[in-house]
Each structure stands twice: as C-alpha cells, then as structure tokens.
Amino acid sequence: MGKKKREEKLKKKALKEWEERRPKTFREALRYFPGIFFRTTLVVMAATLLILLTASLGLTWAQSMWFQILVYLGFYLLFQRFIMGPLAPPRLK
Image (cartoon, rainbow, N blue to C red; front, side, top):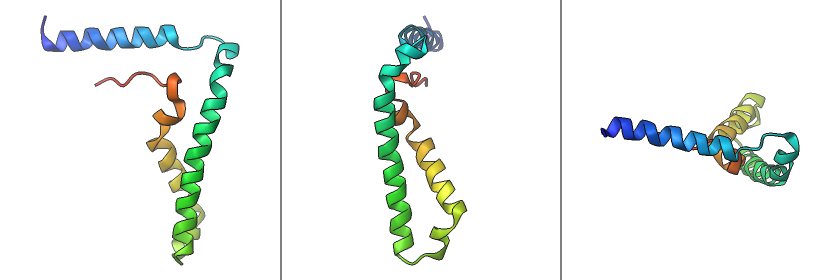
C-alpha cells in the first residue's frame, strides 16, 4: 500500500471514529457545555488582559473598538481547538 493511500485510509478512519464519538443530540452535548464555557472564559480573560495591558501602556490605538474586535477574533481563531476540546474534529494532515 502506498504512502498516500495509507494516509487517506487513516484520515477516513479518524473521521469515522470522531463521527461515532460526537454527540448526536442536544442532551448528549449538554455534558460538554461546562468545559466549553470554562475554556472560553479562559481565552476571553487572556484576550482582555492583553487589551488592558496595551491600553495601560498608553497606546491610543489599543482603545480602538476595531483593535479589540481583532484581538478577540484572533484569540478565538488561535484557540478554537482548545475551546472545543473533545468536540473538535481530528486534525488531518
């Protein structure tokens, strides 16, 4: 079996396992919400700390609404896998 075919087989297997493990109903997903809420809180607190730190340095652009939106969006995109935790799909190379 070639390397490419083996990688495709492993990708399909990982996606199939994730699909089986993923909660199918809202009731099943409820048990994950406290963890997701906690992780989201940690990420937002870190983003807020960065914004406060840059604003306390006297940087006028740090008080801009657009800068704050970009920081929150950037943190969300960077830490999305951390926030989603066990609900995140597997990383495929």
